[in-house]
Image 1 (cartoon, rainbow, N blue to C red):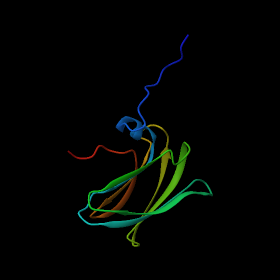
Image 2: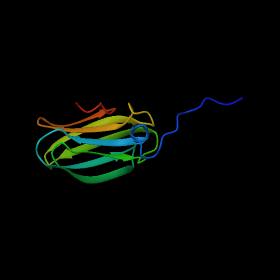
Image 3: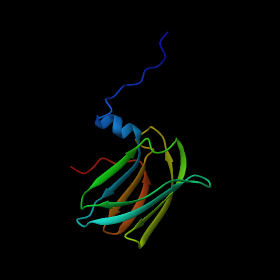
Image 4: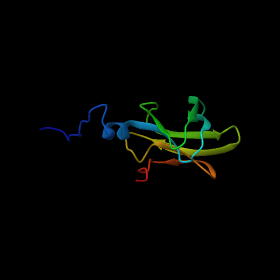
Length: 116
């Protein structure tokens, strides 16, 4: 008897990317911003990087982390800091979502659809 099947997606498809996205950063402002991101589990750094995003630019990393709960710190332009605990898995609603907006930077779990 076959086991439950999962849909297979092309590695270049939007569905595959969303299903395997661990980190998504979106600059929702009309200004270029720099952001420093640190991701760590209980004691160890799992990822640290600096990103430069143009206005209205988004970027993501796929298959960056193992499934689990991570502490995430984001520092916007060396000034505004946000920290959150986020669960990561192959489910799109369990993705680290960092949003840059005019009021600062936020970290949430799950990637909302971009505005039309």
